[in-house]
Length: 148
Image (cartoon, rainbow, N blue to C red; front, side, top):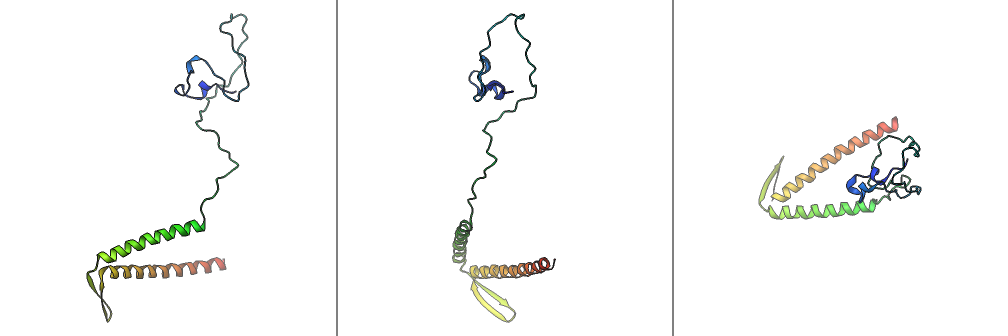
């Protein structure tokens, strides 16, 4: 059964909800009901479906199509390049704002460098160690996959 506009939408969304049911676009045209008819001449009303009518606020989506994929390797490369440039500028500012000298002693070497450069080099050394450990683990997993 096609419902009326008043039955499908809340009363505040219709301009004349109290004036009677308005036909919904797409419904079959109907003849207007008479205002008042005697009870003896009216036919019994057909049984109607009493299930609640759900309301929708947007048209149904076309399930057969998907939106185009807007991501690509080039897009990711540009994003990574911009992020690297921003990080590079921040590192440069950090190094320039920390010119105080720091003395570093490793085994029998003694170095004196600016504090910003010292922290930068220690970060790079940590990233290299992390890369070596993760690279070793990736090689182990590849061997397992090839055997299995």
